[in-house]
Image (cartoon, rainbow, N blue to C red; front, side, top):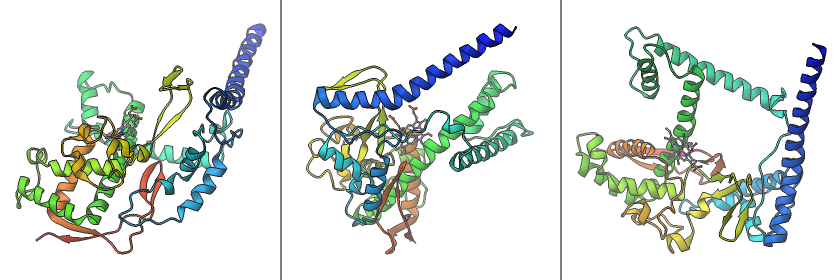
Length: 365
Ligand code: HEM
C-alpha cells in the first residue's frame, strides 16, 4: 500500500515538475527569447526587448497614460494614436513582438485582491443566472419564455422528455457568451452610430427619410420593412469600419505557418489592429480616414479592393438588432451630441467613448 502511495506521489511530482518546466522555462523564458532571436537573425525584424514576466507592460502603460490626455475633434476619426501609441511607435521602429501580461503558474488561485474580486463577481453572476433559469424551469404553464434562454430550455426539455439535456453549467456558459459577446458589442455599435449621425446630420436626415419612405410615417419598422433599409445598413457598416467595437483580433497558429515571407511559429499570438486595417488607403481608397457610407452601396464585400477587408463585420443577428433599434430611434427622434461631449475613444477591451456619449434628443413631429 505504502509503495503505491509513494509511486503515486512520485508520478504527481514528475507531472508537476514537467508542467512547471514547460510553463516557466519553455513558455516564459525560452520561447519568447528564441522567437525574438529568430525574428531578428533570420528575418531582420527587431522589437522592444522582452522582459521576463513584465513583458513590455510598463512602457505600454506609460505611453498610454501620456496619450490618454489627447482629445480629438469630432470629425477626426483617427483615434488609434490615442488608444495604442506603443503599437504605432514600435511599428515605426520594428515589427512588434509582445506576448500579454503573464502571471506565474498558479497565480490564478492565490487570494489576491484582484482574484478575490474576480471570484466574487463570478459567483454573483452565476447565482443571478441560476435564479433566472430556475424561475423559468418552475413555470407552472410549462412555458419557458420566448427569448433565447426560453428556446434553449425548451429544446433541452423536449429532447429528453422533461429532462434538461444541457447541464446547468452549459446553459450558464451560453448565457454568458451571448450576454458578454453580444450585448456590449452591439450596444457600442449603436453608440458610435448615434455619434456619427450627430456629427453628420445630413446622413441622419437621409436615414430618417429612408425609414419614413420604407416603413411609413405612422408605423414602426417591422421585419418586412427592415430588409429594405439599405442606407441604414451602409451607415452601420461604415461605423463598423471606423469605430469597430473590437480593436484587436487575435490569432495563434497551431502549427508553424508562413504569411508572405514571414514565418510565424506555432503558438505565437498575432494581434491584428482593426482600426489600422480599416484605414489602409491602398485597400479602402484615398478617403479611408473619412466617413463615407456610400462606399458600402454595393455591399460589404465590394466596398474595398479586397472582398474581406471589413474585419469583424459581426453577425447578421447583431446587424438586424442594430438596424431595428436605429430605425425606431430615427423614426421618433432627431439627436445631436451635447456640447459637453469630449471625443476621446478608448480601448477597454472594446472601443468606448471615455466620457460617455451625452446626446440631446428632439421628438420628431
Ligand atoms: C456589432 C456587434 C458585434 C461585433 C463587432 C462582434 C465582434 C466579434 C469579434 C471581433 C469576434 C472575434 C472574432 C475572431 O476572432 O475572428 C467575435 C466573436 C464572437 N462573437 Fe461577436 N460581435 C458582435 C456581436 C455579437 C453578437 C450579437 C453575438 C451573440 C449573440 C456574438 C457572439 C460571438 C461569439 C459567440 C464569438 C466567439 C466565436 C468563436 O469562438 O469563434 N457577437 N465577435
